[in-house]
Amino acid sequence: MSTLTRRTLLLAGVAGVTAFSVAASARPGDPFTLGVASGDPAPDGVVLWTRLAVEPLAEDGLGGMPARPIEVDWQVADDERFTRIVQRGSTTARPEEAHSVHVELVGLEPGREYFYRFRALSHLSRTGRTRTTPPPGSLQVPLTMAFASCAQYEHGYFTAYRRLAEDEPDLVLHLGDYTYEYESGIHVAPSGNVRQVEGPTTVTLAGYRRRQAQYKTDPDLQEAHAVAPWAVIWDDHEIDNNWAGLLPDKPQPNFPARRAAAIQAYYENMPLRRSSRLYRRIGWGALATFHMLDTRQYRTDQACGDGLQLCPERLEPERTMLGAAQEEWLFNGFRGSRARWDVLGQQVFFSQYDYIPGEVDKFLLDAWDGYAADRDRVVAGLADVRNPVVLTGDVHAAWGAEVKQRWDDPSSKTLATELVTTSITAGGDGSEEYDETPLWLRENPHVKYFNNRRGYTLTRFTPDELRTDFRGLDYVTRPGSPVHTKASFAVEDRVPGLHRL
Image: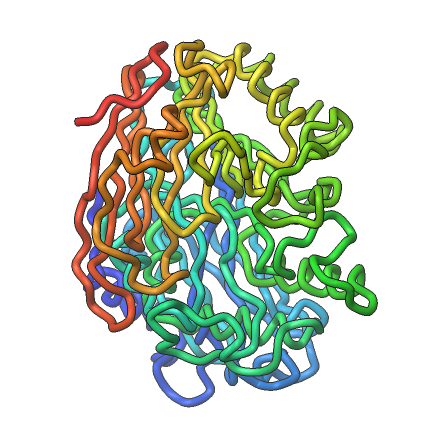
């Protein structure tokens, strides 16, 4: 496999310019200010993405582009210098979709690395690297996958994205809170905010497009998108804090219209296939299947007014996180799975977690603790797969937990493993390392690890083992932090539970 470093990416961006008949792109009028991305890989293809924007922060959200369609050419090669082009074509970036481009490639070879780029308005984009998944029956191709969540632009610099790119994963999962909706100064980190976002709190299509564009101009985020295909799902802040279905967290006029605007902007700015739903499956040969869940759009409203509290209502059997159709889809996927590892890519803390030591129990009702019966149904469904793993974001810290058959009985059977990634920046620098057995962890003995630094999580899947490295940064309130592996765990084939390395 070729090693794609920052230098080779830059070389690939200018190599073969004569053949692609464009001028150098680093000059005024460059429409590729938001970078490139790929996503949702399959054995024969992948989605290629870019969005044209000569003025990314234009107040109307349209990136300074003319109100007319723009032709965009694209190339795919199996070498970074584009001497062996395997596919090429043209598509149209339309103003009604903020001049975004989604090329759904087919006809590529399985299990291969590819390079891609775009051309428009006499400019050439940077080069991205992507890959197709292995053939459906292949078990012996390992997978290095990184996952991340919660990138609050104001709270810090996106160094974690750059460090993630330097680890050169085969696949990246983003588990939500890719952007935050607040205007500057509303959501303040304990250490203070170090950057500002443009514009008011996002409620309109123009506002969401502009916010997405500001995030995409970040060079560290662009590096992470260019290094590997992504699979993305939203949580709440891409739209509105703690929204549920068609209901906002706090009363506001016409939330359904706001939600629709945010969803449109999300699609325009992500490497997604054109589909009527976000929940979907991505396979990695016979090694792993990723069941990407939507835990926002179909849930019932949070119990007891949301928040952290004692709440008997959370146990009501009709309460649902996934909705009936998504539940059926998930359980059918479990029953039909032949993968060595079945992985839930989802947003909020799955394991039971009592936040208050002592006899009084208090749970976070926006997480699965507020939908206990639905979680019990999912836990029962995990029995249908060989090696179930739950991946989680949202809570701004790294956690490792064992999913129990009965949460209040530490001796009950361990059915699965939950890995929770910390935030990219949300919460600021974080604190020094905690003792791993304070009172509030002893209250929850199935929780085996906690770390409060910012960063991401790196995993490696093989037929015999899943290895997890929790990667943490020293700081995010200034750029350039090194990254360290804070802890490593292994999950063995057919032996659910965490084993510290």
